[in-house]
Image (cartoon, one colour):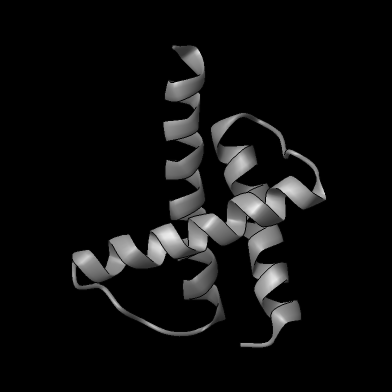
Length: 80
C-alpha cells in the first residue's frame, strides 16, 4: 500500500473515531497515529471473527472500529 494512502486512511480513521468517541479530533499527528494503530487493531479483530474484505471503504471502516476501541481502552486506563 502506498505510504501516503496509508497515512491518509489513518488520519481519516483517527478523526472519525475522535468525532464518534469524544466529539472532536485530536490534531493531525495524533489522528494519524490513532488511525494507524486502530487499523492494525481493527484488522486483527476482523480476522479473528472471520470477516476479511477489501477496498478503501472497508479499510476505513475497519480502522475506525479499531481506533474507537483504542480510544475506549485508553479512556479506561486514563480514569484510573
